[in-house]
Image (cartoon, rainbow, N blue to C red):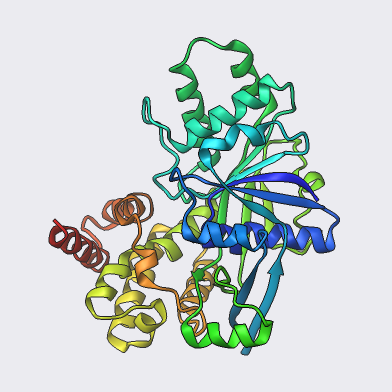
Length: 381
């Protein structure tokens, strides 16, 4: 397989979402592409990265949930990953002729410009500088960070870093004219490592102790905002592979629906759930009192701020709560709690502002969730 994708981020989500899709394309759509992962943070590889390299990049995904009332548990081997390297070596991959795509998930805090800092966009600039110097074609960027207009913002930050350097018109022209930055929306709940009982069962089933196996839900949805006349499917045959993907010139309605109903609810419930002694999202939904709190957030506070038909909103909101209740997901609250402040600003604050505009008051339940976040950070001082 030729290396066609450079992936910034070695975490569970990309391995259970993008790399799973690449495997689908290789198996059923003739993509024949490999993924080289770059660990965005750290001068040395993390433990999971070392394990993945020791396994030759091979690992398994386990998709567990309930579809049409039936329990589903699908384990698949992912063999499209070549390995993991640290970001200090990013330039060496710029000169691979077959490289065409760059995907990323560096969290909401990853796509930002900080003058003089080695941010993710600064690493991208190093990559593109080496690519342009080698006389190779431009790249297509497909960031998966959950910020609005992630592709546009990545390009903006890359150009800001470029402006800090001596004037380089050929490189600027290369970025502006030869590279494409697509904004995206990603939707799949990825729980990460299986619980001990399931892990033991998978070892017996696979005959392999896969310490980087990652669990997620069967549901997935991918929206890619593409420029006019840009046929991404021709190069990246996601639809042909059966992936639930939408190409659109305007992804905003999809993004608002998903980020508010799913992600804002996650961020609102997480520290309140931890205070109650819960460890997983499904436990929050199973508890009657907490379930009522979550339904208030979703149907009374988020619902009126989403400008879509009521029936469409109701169907999607109910599907989100059903996914939250998935007994197989084991979606850990502590994993949702990572980077909570950045997440609250991008996911919850717009809802709070829109709710205030509509009703002249703050959304009570969402503010309870915020107060729990504040208590956590106050106690952590």
